[in-house]
Image 1 (cartoon, rainbow, N blue to C red):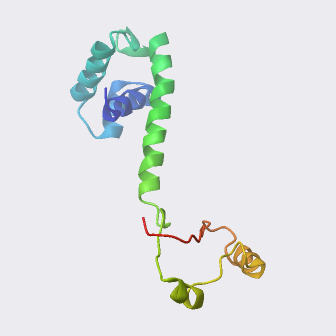
Image 2 (image 1 turned 90 degrees about the vertical axis):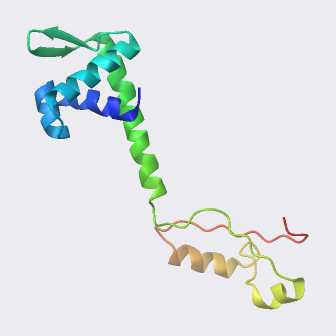
Image 3 (image 1 turned 90 degrees about the horizontal axis):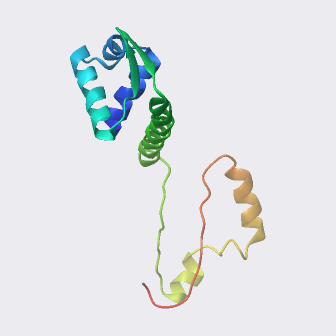
Length: 138
């Protein structure tokens, strides 16, 4: 079972049928039917109750739909997080003590004016955390 299978399954449920889901997914109907049947075979349960050409979600299908929604939403959230323009991660900057005392800013924990100014300037932006430490580089 992969995300594509879950996407097809969810599309069939929301579209109300294989034909409409195939149109929305830009696939042929036989492909969607095959993928749903493969998913059912892999899970060992019927996800739909078939009555002629009509499909109704089975109890197992209802259960899987909840998981499919959560998994697909989480995958989308991960994609968005990876393509976010905000800088992330840890930036390590090293300097000799004499250079650091003259060139690097005063640690914000020690400079209350800088904290107030940065809070007013950075409203609604991502926070940046600074830490100063003496010792050998890692």
